[in-house]
Amino acid sequence: MRLHPRLQAAFRTLTLAGVACALAPIPAEARILRNDSAEPGSEIGFYPRLQGGQHFATILDVPDDLPDYRVCAVVVWIGPNDFNVFTVDIFGIDADDMLTSDIYRSDLDAFQVFGSQNALNEIDLRDYRVTSNERRILLRMTHAEGFDAPPTIAFDGDGITPHRNRISALLRDGSYLNDFTENLI
Image (cartoon, rainbow, N blue to C red; front, side, top):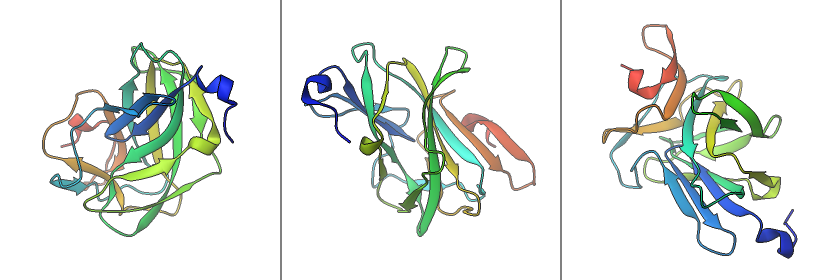
C-alpha cells in the first residue's frame, strides 16, 4: 500500500541493514546508516551455530535531519549459501539501549532469504508502511523455529563499531551468548 502523494513529503525513507542502513527523503536517493564497512567482495565469514529462535541485532542512530521516516527495507548479509527464514523486529530504544517502543514486528510474516558469499540481501518492507520518528532504533532478525544456521548473519575482520551489534547464539562450548558481538570470543 502506498502513501497518498501529499503525505509522502511528510515522511522520509529508511532502509535498515544488519551491517548498514539507508535513509533518504522520499523522492531522493536512500542514505545508508552503517555500523560496518563490509561491501560485496569483502572477506567475510558466517556465524555457524545460530538456531531457530536465536537472533542477531544492530543499533542504529537516525540523523536529526530526518524527523519522520519510513522503513523501506532491511539490507543484511546472510550466507554462505542455501536459504533460511527470519522474522524482523524494529524497536525504538533509549540511550541505555532499553526498549521504548515497538516500531514493527513481523510476527507471523516470516521472510525467506537466500544466502550468498558475495552479495548483500534485501528484505522489502515497503508494503508494510513502517513509519517512525524514533532517533535510536534496534533492528532484530530472528531465525524462525526449525530454521537453524547456516545460512545466517555474516561477520568480517575489519573491526566493528562497539556496542552496536548484538547476537544471541549457541557457542561451541555449549554455552549461550546474548551480548554485543565484541564480547564473542
